[in-house]
Image 1 (cartoon, rainbow, N blue to C red):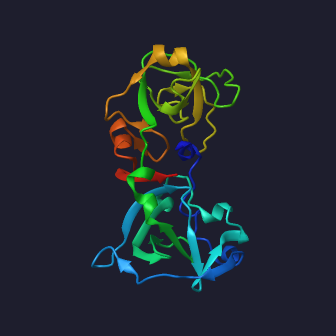
Image 2 (image 1 turned 180 degrees about the vertical axis):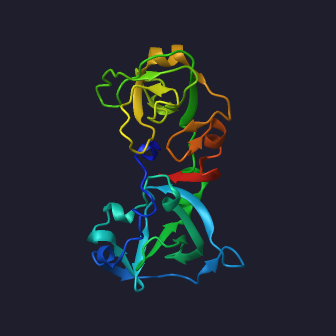
Image 3 (image 1 turned 120 degrees about the horizontal axis):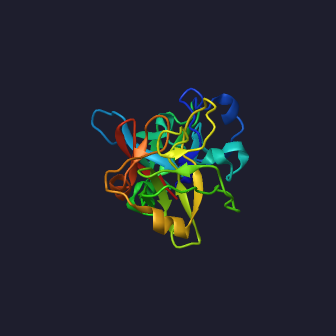
Length: 253
């Protein structure tokens, strides 16, 4: 699911490239079996692949395959789920490792090399069709995104754009991504505390969904953070979102 994009985003400064203190905790596993490196561009410039959410990383240090924290299941062995400039995956090119094509991810760690299997950058992992943008037609109060879907003091107003998890559309309770919590994008009731604004996951009843929402036009913007990042039904159909005015594809398992 794409829900984790609503976690408050880290800045590039806080997402500094991991240094030696973290890499030292990686374990040596095996020697690398790799082919010649192939650049994607003749001028060797970087190519942006897009955002990758929880994609498995293959890590090497001094030519040996390692795992982060000596644990194949550690989060350090997977890409982050957040959306932001610091999380864009970029590459100069690829090589074969054990007979499979891998992109070398640029500047992911400062003292270890990170690779991602090229299969994850295909249509199979770039399907955002389970999300659609809807427009609120009548005011109503959504519920909290907890298991109890408890009532809130929030209010969605006509014209507000919401994101609907289409996997939940036929359930009694429908999961939605709300407008950002700044009381300016069609959702009111949040206490303003001066923090970074982002979308939140809420619940609405099936009756509220049927009677108060309609599918938005292809280019209606669903803004999900203070940076103005957004998605539309047209961008979701293409498998991506807009970050700082540029379209990027999102790959997820």
